Length: 443
Image (cartoon, rainbow, N blue to C red):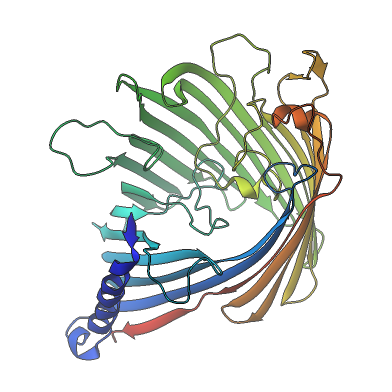
């Protein structure tokens, strides 16, 4: 929900008033087992973009800027039976507002939810909330993005012993209406309605599995018909001693929207496997491969065979330069990503990671003359670090470089008369200041 800047004073006043009321010992002293926490986050991030999302072309100049996420949130809990969360955020770029503000800017209500516990096992959570499950491949918080990702939903939860389950329900509209329930997803959430069931069972301390059944309802802009897309699958986890293995499989069926005007029968899938071995507390090695089905560039089939990872945190998986499934398409040819990670904990305060990716298409690539091209798209190297300055303050940064193959031009729809720069790279550095402040806790 977007709110103009001239309402910021009112929102801030409400939040501060809530903090004052809930944090007042004279008011809360009459109640037992109550707690109020305030969370503040300031996260400026400087970036140098020379080929992020898609190759930069000769004649184009790189971009540089500093963006910042500023959040303030409040959590209230009582008797382990009620929790309420409220947070607002402002996402800005340094310098985009004049010193004397005369025009409206936007802030957003990031979270606003209440969670009720019927007993130690059952709960219901209602309102604007984060939906993040497993490794965030299909449903994720998208914390890397300054705006993050949230949903308006009802979430029913069950957690007992070795079994955990969540069921969610969402129904979206662009505004309060008198007639008609048509929903334009280009203006708001990307679906009209959503339902899912997620379950996880822990067999032993080393072995567990999870399963997800997700149904999305989307509305056609031409005739207002509604179609359904189902995503079914899950994960298997094995972790013992120094070895950690994860296996993933998802299948998509139903009908998928194309340009929000027609719905096409879908038959797509993805699978992934990852193994991490920690030699000691300082050095760890990870190796893995992700395969997401695609569609041949010269295919005449009306069926959708390319997998859509939906609302996951894609930045986490397919290379930090985000060439795939984030902000730039790659002609629906799918992806085969094989990678190697080296994790280095230099000290208690400093850690490093080096990641190498090899990207190939999962379907046929066609060159400018209509012939078959190589499936190899390129290689990426990512180097990142994190340094803990003090409690609740951390500096992070990284350098990434993409080594493109000729087929990258074809899948990125770069014309034959355009040339990519020889150097495609991205540099970033960020500081995250994120304290949790205990305002009140009853005795």
